[in-house]
Image 1: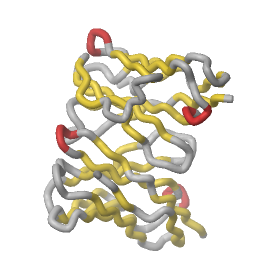
Image 2: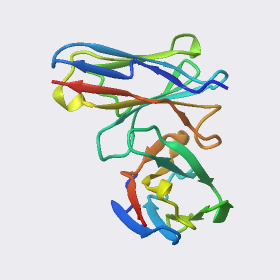
Image 3: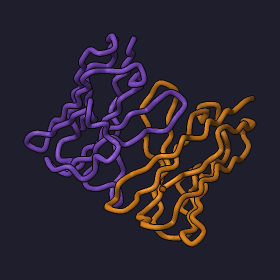
Length: 115
Length: 109
């Protein structure tokens, strides 16, 4: 079974530029998560989708971050404009259903460096 | 808030036993997960507890006390490859997950 796919794996941009990340979850997984992980910290949930609806986006900086999951499968996370403090690994994860019942499977992540 | 507290770093000797503790807010609790994360890699699932007691899975066991807001991960017969960060994660209301900062475990010969 294929795992969670993410691209790109690495991205370097200058502050104020825009960037987009793509995630393809495991087939059949209803729940999709985007996390931001800063070096030395645990993953911080940015947004959680259940199919193509948003369950929680309370920690998503909506003035610069946006995410969508059209058709309830693939998802994209966008940052516009980027700030230096956005440098982090962005992890996508999926689960068969919500976390309380099923484990999350994580993709390899996208390492973003903002200069 | 939904603060999750776990030690920042622990060290142990190969072949020994180590216990990593985690405390969390009890309100709106829907389960406790442990994940392992090697440096530069994505987290991988270790265990899930929703009822009180000990769940054993090979060399790894996880314990939960819901009334105390307390969990621990027990690693037996430590191997060098167990050197990693161990993340405690709480499923809260609507099963929204919150991760702790992680405990960096260093296993030395």
